[in-house]
Length: 138
Image (cartoon, rainbow, N blue to C red):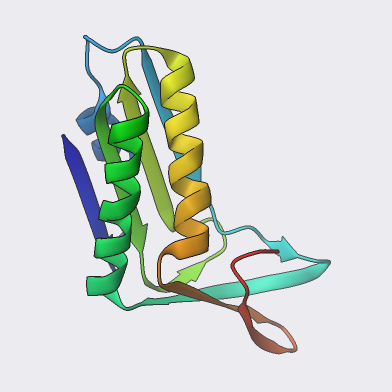
């Protein structure tokens, strides 16, 4: 089962958690990305996230296909926000349910790491002295 969303609305972490829970799975891994208050010593005011959503959804599906062919996972959730986010907001939640914890951890880490590299979601950080588009690889 998969659950994928790219949207401007706030991500409900509890709903994501409830969706991925499965009593047949021994491992549930949940990654919650949070807008941090500082980058490279500069205070972050906000993030502006933009995406070419049809292509982003296609790339996320490719990531999920790989995960399902590599690890024995039962459920995968990928929710990503776009729009203007403030410090403390949640731009991304990844959740994986698997029979064993190692598979859940490995699959979840693969999803977020690959998403950052291949999915067309762009991030502009705003600072007190201006803003900058951020490369996916710090």
